[in-house]
Length: 266
Length: 348
Image 1 (tube, one colour):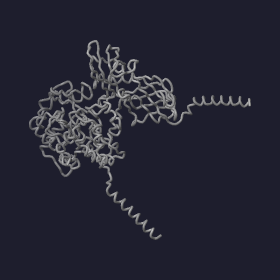
Image 2 (image 1 turned 45 degrees about the vertical axis):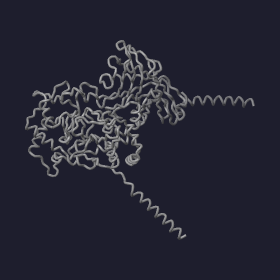
Image 3 (image 1 turned 90 degrees about the vertical axis):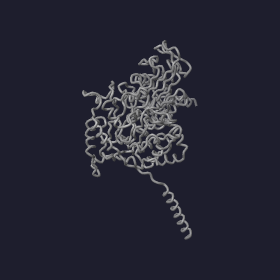
Image 4 (image 1 turned 135 degrees about the vertical axis):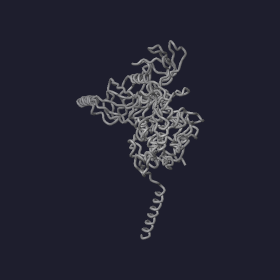
């Protein structure tokens, strides 16, 4: 009795050891899973509350943000071996909208793996435009419903960033409007960003990780390029400033953490 | 047992009969071939992505002539694009749309659009499929939203049937809507003018001496921008038109945001030009005589003026009265009466 008790302890222990080691074994990640990407919109380290709080940037301009909407797409995940999974282009564009709270992207049917970096684009690339009606699908409908389509040209706004501001020279709250997109065929403002996940995002038939990105809206005007609203408060088609805004916007994303698990809890 | 056999045979015959009866009612969709005239450059539109079919074309035509595409239900595409004027808005300097609001530009022709890769006077889109979004959503043209249009069409059982018949993945949605519109436009090829028949050596058509003289002047003085038998190189150029101070329309620069594109507009095709007055992007000239007079003595210098119009000889194009008359005679040979009268494109 005593011997069998000991044996059972040993068996149980070894079973635990085996189960632990098998978790670490990449070959055990099989099937497909869903990768959730949370776009947590913020401004300079604080939560972004639309039309509520204000923040002052390095150019001494104080902004109250009323709208932040942007298009993301062409998602690619790279695993530990450098293998790239490209999400299907036709279903691959999403509109992140702070107003409606639509801030999570779900990439379904991602093959099992240990992913270490994430690449995506901000906006719509020329390839998609040149697909014509065939390529637009629901994106056009969604974009129109979220103020992401220009009416004087058949193009998408990649970024819609609006609010009011004051500065040392402009003391009355003044509207600012930043609409950035490509300029027909003459200027392509689509930009991509690649983010190191800092840890592995594990995907399998029962592992659906959540990649939590923090998005700093302050970066749009106050990033690599410094854009002063007191100089120009309405920027829609500017050969000089629109590409600068596109570069800034592509730099507003950082990986906060990756949550591995079933994907049911965050 | 014998009876049973007869009964079942009878049943089988009846079944066959009803089946064939149903099939007779269902017309099969068929592929349409798109004309690529031998004297034209290659087609720019990718037909493989959206091959025109009879049902798709008919749906596109129905949409083209349907006021439902506008906010008030009255302004169809065909309201401003009239077939008898090569799908322009004859006699209107500015096209007027919803609630009689006026735009700032003159309606361009839709003929031969499948051979171009930039659309609208300023190239606001580089895909024909996406073009209809612009007039539909423009607040002074049709003043609608794409979503609003689709809601109206989705509620219409005729449209539901037409969309399902025209597209394998049926349904009244943006993709099919834009594809149908494009199919209608892609089929609009104007290629049977007197000039076309002359260059293709068809039907023994020849040009008069006066017209030939005009062609020769055209080739020397106009054909560097109005290239090929489309009579446009599709580029954006500032032709030296003094900007209308009330509008100060920057043209291409409004799309590109580049000051180097100020006052540049797409070189228009000259097909059916005798029918498409008034002329220029803002329809300021009522006659071809006025257009030629402008090129002779009205061209204004500016930083973006096209270099071809600024030579050692001065601004513009040197033309005397006889040359202008010959040019206008030649331009008259670009009128394609078969296209203007083609029942396939007609509203009624």
